[in-house]
Every structure is written in structure tokens, then in C-alpha cells.
Length: 554
Image 1 (cartoon, rainbow, N blue to C red):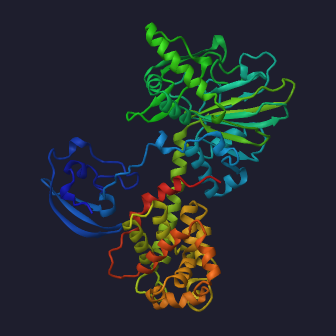
Image 2: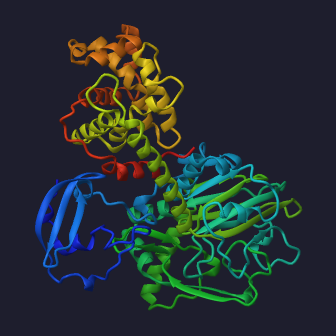
Image 3: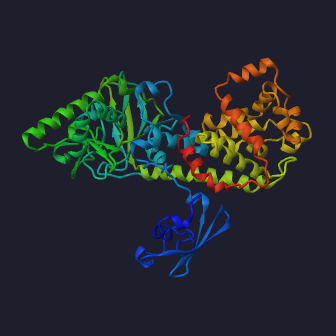
């Protein structure tokens, strides 16, 4: 627990959250840094109880301002959330990682189920793309998809661009020729960060789509050729589009949308943040202008450029699939390179596309995560305030204590979350916890795990699903464990099936999540102390938010 006196005073004062300092609706600051005392100091710091849990009331000198800080907020945060645009917030992949499990969802499920929508948007954020199936094949539908998470980015190509064979093409995209891996619109700054491609017709022979994780390829270049990576990340190159040459860079377009445009940007092929982390890929040989550097620098650049291009073409990085009518691909244009194999010109192939921006998608996903956490927090505050079936703590206190015990034991984040949420099944289903106490098993472990599986991955849900079986297992294999149970837990043990048979115990021990379930069970039994310090739900919200963001795609 951090003491406010030991923290940088100006930083702490700048982060006061009272209504005099921040607008209660937006959370935005109501003061400038120059409005604060130049050298504030803590006059007094007093322990207090806040809505979000225990914390401190601080009175400041010299102006007497009062601030409140929760312990959870003051706790050291060594693992800061990564920038959502950089490689450390992504799951880098090669084709074999996803060949049999493309991140996909049915359009109706995505549209109607917030859990499916969140998983889909998370996949775009973490993997760089997602595929919606069964999207109505009507013209203009692609913009309706974009508007489920953000806004259409209108360019000189309009709100929508067409990808089909044209009789007099000014772009390879309007022929049946192969299109090699590239990013779109590198000559814009800012570049459109998302692209959507909606398949209306695809009866042509050939015309398979392809994606390459440019971040993974750039990371591989960094391993194989650190000097080349450094050169490509610090050398701005000229990208250019003018209407006189047609659309030479997008790989998509209407064939007429480029009229009247003259666009240019000078950016590196590999963009990095101040820490050197990969943040953007711009790669499109058709729109790369003439680089003018001293001869030796030009030779070094072209050697690195060619090596990166060869690496992007390696089969291990190229994920190929076929878009069928009703498929809509959403992908990160600052990370993934997209491509297309050749197809017969006489075949029917028509895609409609549009651009959007990643910030809108990430914002929508964050709002969905916040809604989920608000829902769970409400369960803790409402049903969680009820008695815990014969124990001397409430259900919420019990679960919060279990989460705190797991955290104190150094458990990984998903297991801490499982300990925190393990009894949510008492709040769902037709059979209640009171029915359990009266002799009817409510199977709350399974009910809770199934409910949580809407949002969380197996590392959270499976220990929850097995925590009742873990009690039965420990009572069967560990002498003296039964004596550690509270009277209420002994009673529910009988209702839940009693100690396992040797065969049942053997099957349980072989389960991949059995060890985590046993650890959870021990915290479960220990989390019944009415005198134990118990953090508020707010203490665990950042952890749960991070787990929601990284939950596996469907």
C-alpha cells in the first residue's frame, strides 16, 4: 500500500478526482497545471473508507484543498497498459496460427449480441482483422457495418469504392491481375487505419484473398537484420498519388474516384513509437516515389527494403482464404498487408469497400467492456450484499476476499479473476443458492462459468467451472481436508455429490485446469473471515478490463 506522503506531490495533486478538479460527467480537468501551487505538500493524510474501498483523505498545503485517493489507485502499477496501436498490445501471428480458426462471426450474432460484437472488435484490435459472415449482399451495406463501431472515412474515392473488373481500368485492382501484399493509401497522413471489404459476388476462378501480419514480419526482420530494421524505421520515404497516373497506391478504387487529387506523405516503411515498438507499416511499391539520398545510404536502404519485401512474401506469413458472397472483412490497414491472387477476367467478382478509423473501433470495444464491468459490479453491489449461505460474510465479501488471496499469492491474472468471480453462478439460473442449502444442487460452478464465457476465455472460466469438483477431489485425496471445511461447506459437499471416487479423482486430476481449480478452492475455503481487510470491486476492474480485451476470438 502506497503512502500519499511518499509520492510526488505535484503529480498527486494534479490527479485529484474531486468535483472541484474534474467535471463529474466527462472526467476532464477543470484547471491548468499553472493554477496549482508551485510546490504543494501534504499537510495531513488520514485513512478513510471510500465507495471504491479503503483509501486516504489528503489535505494540501498551502491552499487547504482536500483530495481522496483509493488504495487501489495508489498501488504501484508496474505493468502499465500498452498503447493499443503498438506491437506489445497485439498478438502477432503467422499463417499456420490462424489457418483453421479465422476470427469470425455471423452478422446477425454480431449485430444482436454485445458479447459477440466485443469478441469481434477485440479480434481486430489484437489480431488485426475479423471476418463477418452472412452480411446482406446489397450495395452500400459495407458502410452499415462500419457504422456499428465508428464512422466511415470519406476520401477522394468517396464513401464507398468498388473492386471489380472494369472495361478500361486505370488500376490493377480493376483487372484480374494478381495484387501483391500492400497497405492502402500510404500517401495520406493520417492514413485510413481500417479497411472493410464486403463481397457481393465471387464466382470467378481464382481471386483468393490474402493477409500478412506486417507487425510479425517486421519483428522477424528486427531479429534477422537489426540494422536493416533500424534503417527502415528511421528513413522517411516519399509516397505519392496524383490523378494523372490513376490510383497507383490503394489497390482498390472506383476507377474514377482519384480525379482531382494530389496526395503525398513522407513516412518510414516501418513506423515505431519513442520506445522503438512497431506501430505502423506503410508498404506499397506502386505508390513509392523516388528516394533521394547519398549513394551509400540509398544502397543500404534498398538492401533493407528488398529484404523486408522478401520476408513479407514468405509463405509462412501469408494467410490465404476465399471471400464468398456475404463475407465482410474488417482489417487494420496500419498493420496488415492485403493481397489477391489472379482470376479470370470473365468471372464475376465484385467487392465493395470503405475506410474507417481504428480509434472508433477501439472506443466502441472499450465502452462494451465498461458495460460488462458495470454489470458485474452491480451484481456484487446488489445480490452480492446478501448472506453467504450460513457463513459470516456476504457473498460479495467472500468473492472479493478470494480474489485478494489469489492476488497476494502471486497468481496469474486470469486465475485472480476466476477466484474473484467464482460464485457468480449463485446469481444466475432458476435454482438459487438457497435451494442448494435446502438440498438441491444449483450447479453454480457450471452456471457461472457458462455466463462468464460470454466475455472471458477458458483461463478464467474453467477454474470456475471446476471449483466445486475441486472440493470433492480434495476431500477424496487429501487427508484432513474435510476437517478444514466450514459447516455450511460440509453441508453443500453432500448435496454436490460428496468426496470423489478414485476413478472420479483420477479423471479430475487429468483435466488441464485441475491444478488451477484446486488453488482456487483453497482460497475459496479461506475467504470467509469477516475481519479480513477486503478490497472493493474497483480494485479489480483494471485486471478484468485487460482480460476482456484479450479474450480469445470466437
